[in-house]
Image (tube, rainbow, N blue to C red; front, side, top):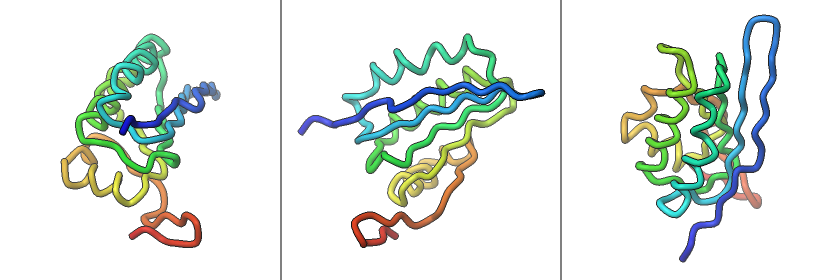
Length: 122
């Protein structure tokens, strides 16, 4: 089965003191998505952003190597010592970040449980 995924939105917002880039990802992110993720996220390194938010609300599954790639590319785009924000991971993605120790390389924001079709993932 091929993974379905897409980069839904890339937005950049400048404020008085900070530039924030937001990337919204959707679909199952695994080996099939890595080349395109690299192609689309690598240019962030030239944007000189102060804050990077990766919204994974629409990601039901992500493998460890893909999560590591996303964090690597995010760190290349950010100033030294600044961690990217992973927003709204579903419980399985949050657990992957915690078990793989990748959660130490980012700030995880969002609810711990995810409601979909009347059922709550835990």
